[in-house]
Image (cartoon, rainbow, N blue to C red):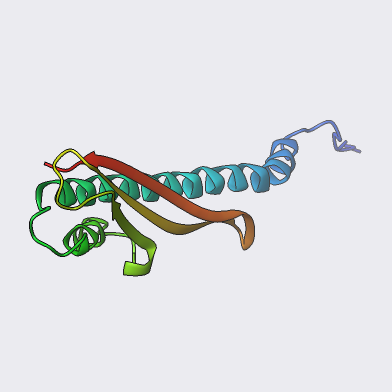
Length: 133
């Protein structure tokens, strides 16, 4: 009679069980990195948009619109953001004096959301100062 023994020392499934425990943590880490990258991309876009708006205000001081062209340039250059005119402010100490300062400030809301859980939310704000030419 041939007796067949089953070895209970086989550890082939152990790595699958360990991977099942670690997978949710790895997934949350990767999704967090992606969400942070998207938020950082929005901040860079917002900073570039305020720079474009401040430059537009600096070179078009004789237009007489008191920053309306700069506000429109800021909104137009933020291509993947849905900025509204209420989120962009343009101010100057004197619109007719060369060398006076102009400031363009834009605010955009953000939310870092990982698997339906909001980790962080708030507003991204960028301000750029230029001198009127």
